[in-house]
Length: 371
Image 1 (cartoon, helix red, strand yellow):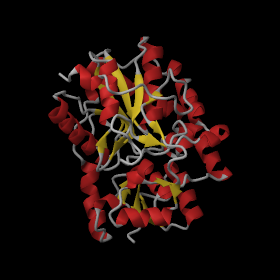
Image 2: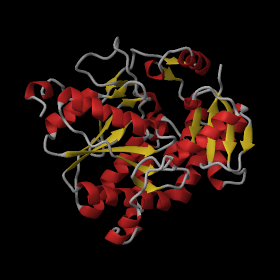
Image 3: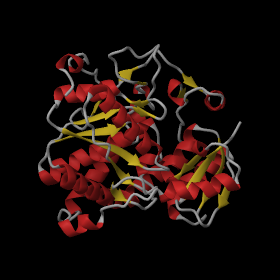
Image 4: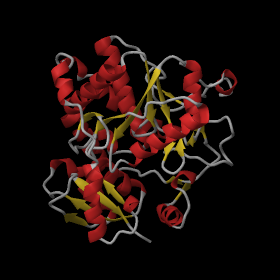
């Protein structure tokens, strides 16, 4: 067990983000005034020449009116479908872990999904669970101070990690490694199970669906995930007992749709019918096959891509490539896929070529330009 001296060293977080604190508390340090954004070209060159993506922030994409209309239209059309996936993943969490839980979302795509799971469990099962949002970074691991803070406040509860969706499973792997390292360092066993709304990569066992469909929160950046940037870890900015950092975009308060998103989906919970029974949840015991990652090997070979991390599969990850990387091309299963409206609009807006790739496991794949 972790000794109390280690646990007591992490101070309480400062208020952060635009969610109601009853929905989620961000265990993140506010870096406003300490860090400025880097333009995409410079950032991409630094990443591809050995710099780490977590040491700098991209300039946030400012959506056009047409693009925002797609977000609102998608939210209207898919609210019930998203709520249904929230129900499935929430019931699976409850079935497997019981009710003595702390929900821990991985910032930032996991945060709105964690809010929805918290609200579902409160509304349908009268369970008011604590919910925190913390940082995890590929190549840097999980924010150990955030985990220690949770353990010092909820020593007898199980932790359930939550993210938005899976691509090729990179964060799933990072989480497993981080939990192994945490056990070696502190002697505490974390459950590395990652619950997601959508698992098109077939790399987790706790999910709401495996369909690669458009989760409306994947369309936007900070404005749909609490007005926080992606997370940053730099030792010159983050002290020994501090959480990983973010920018808090207070200047975008008038444009935020974070609360609109979770309110709209939550409103569907009352129309979902009965909670899942044992037979239904038994059918969802997901076999982890990593079939998504396997399928990417062929794409890597065909397009002579040196690093598989340059391939970003699935609607969520392709959207991220278009919003904050320099994409070379986007592959789609078919140009008539109704889930790809915002992808095609972004490609047109940014002059990115689109190719049909009929045997795609996912709806689409974004490929980062090799500089």
